[in-house]
Image 1: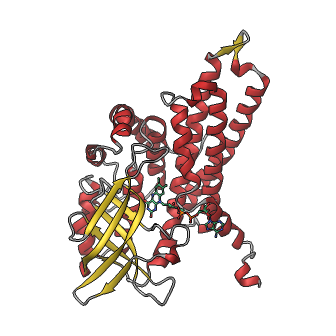
Image 2: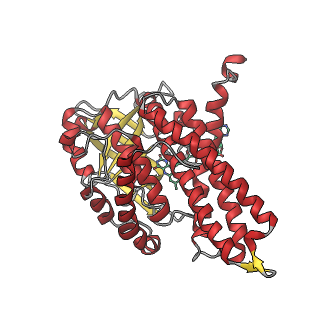
Length: 385
Ligand SMILES: Cc1cc2nc3c(=O)[nH]c(=O)nc-3n(C[C@H](O)[C@H](O)[C@H](O)COP(=O)(O)OP(=O)(O)OC[C@H]3O[C@@H](n4cnc5c(N)ncnc54)[C@H](O)[C@@H]3O)c2cc1C
């Protein structure tokens, strides 16, 4: 289905972005997957081309372009031609805005230009061994010691955890209040800050995912982000955009899986004809085509709503839920249509299958998305008891 949300300048941008992902990212994928992380050079190159922190003001190294459609294009082109383990958007549009929106002038001037150049790589550390979906269970503690905050605890499953230079770390500042959390900027080299191993995952092999440890880390007051008691409130605000980012990526992955598979079923023959011409294959692909189009329209509309400042948390949750469930179903059906080849890692579709499994879990699991949507229907058991 034709998409109507892009203007000619977006299409031009897409062409140059496509060249970047086709020539400088995609060809490195196999090597990055083997080594377990993306070369830092990829971030630097993206920075050089102006693809990082596009939303940031020019004085902080950005281009002052808040229009989310440009980020959506980067997400889509990376999904299609780049490497799904290259978490450029996490750095650029998911973590950096915490600093852009909550940071002081000093923090923004000190940190953002290096992020825009791809010299400082960002991550966000919320999840802990005993607290994932339930952020109120966070145990990492930050104590106000006058000149600094003393940070103790650990995080797990942190994206960009090995190559990252600066992490927004969520820590408890008020032991009495479940939502008494603060956000702290922890930098590479701070005494007491250590990383665990690069965790072995079923998919997204090029993406480094790690544990982080904080042992009496003295975080200077200059590295506190916003009000240290309002972290929970800030997270709620930023998580809506995280869900939209995930939705854009998932529908793009579903579309890519569909295209790869359509080409495959036209080539591959069985019983004297292309396998795509069996009615069961044709029906399956027809169903996928219709559903991808429908979800794409919904996600595109969410992007426009987001640009207008109107995307609410519930609608973002709907987009995340729909797009990631779609991705899961599409990659599964596409593996089936590939037959044995679909199980072989050398085939892109096999990697798409394992890479896709996480999208229903991270950025808020889909059960949590259903909770958010369900509670908005006035079906909150806490209120209806
Ligand atoms: C590859 C990868 C990258 C990640 N990157 C990051 C990162 O950069 N930063 C970060 O902070 N975290 C990151 N995470 C962590 C991710 O966000 C969490 O794994 C996710 O939020 C789920 O938390 P959990 O693993 O503790 O699962 P749990 O919270 O233990 O959930 C387990 C199951 O219980 C279900 N469940 C939980 N609560 C409810 C409920 N109220 N109702 C119904 N069902 C419920 C869940 O949906 C899930 O199915 C990453 C994880 C992975 C695997």
